[in-house]
Amino acid sequence: MNRPDPQTPAHHHNRRAWDALVRENQRFTRPAPDEDFLDPLAKMDGVGWLGGDIRGQNVLCLASGGGKHGALYAAAGARVTVVDISPAMLELDRQVAAERKLDVRTVEASMDHMPMFADGEFDLVVHPVSTCYVPKIAPVYQEVARVVRDAGLYISQHKQPGSLQADVTPARRGYELVEPYFREGPLPAVVGSQHREEGTLEFLHRWDELLGLMCRAGFVIEDLVEPKHGRADAAVGSFAHRSHFVPPYVRVKARKRGSVSPGRRIQLIAP
Image 1 (spheres, helix red, strand yellow):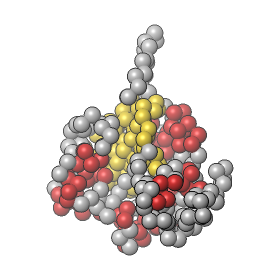
Image 2 (cartoon, helix red, strand yellow):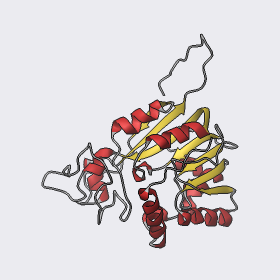
Image 3 (cartoon, rainbow, N blue to C red):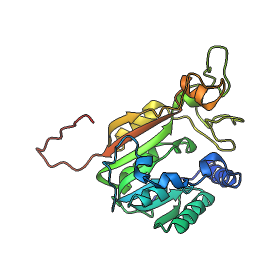
Image 4 (cartoon, rainbow, N blue to C red):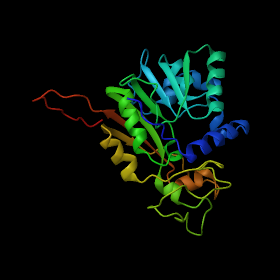
């Protein structure tokens, strides 16, 4: 059954915004450097969630254009599809794939509407920071749950809500919460932030949405880490200084629940 395209003004705004960020060579639009290809899987999976080998797996790099994620997973031996809402970001993937002779399929679509993919088409979905760019996160998780196979992995990273609440400049004792946790609509525009992207529309998703809705979409969370970007001795107001007070990201390993035969018990083993 074809679902109606849910794209909103925010989708169209962010498509144009990311195209503009590519033209400006913004830091998250720069392809992976040569050194990352020396051991591409280790670069992308420093915590070892993927078992050390993804050769032959069907991998969806979701909302991850820009010539980095798709190229590195392809270099590690996966069959890679990259989905992104920005044509300019996808063009970077095609350029890097051509230069490095990698087989990468690119699809222009929104992360919350992927009718071009079959149910259970992918073994693994990797999803770098991007859920902050959609107004509602539940449709994203529902689409991921549909396109990943039973017992397939979903590795995602998100902006922590506290980081989106906190001011971008330091106060006397740290970084003040200036945005409400329970809010509707996009966050106010920002200038000079290294934790948000100028020109985009961003939305704060609460913990009950980030994790609870993931579970309700059919995933079991197996592990969670907060990538460490902070340094106590960093210059006041810098990315590392603010990250010492307010962790910017959370990374989640989740597995899609499979069909269980009557009478069969599932044992969850801590990672």
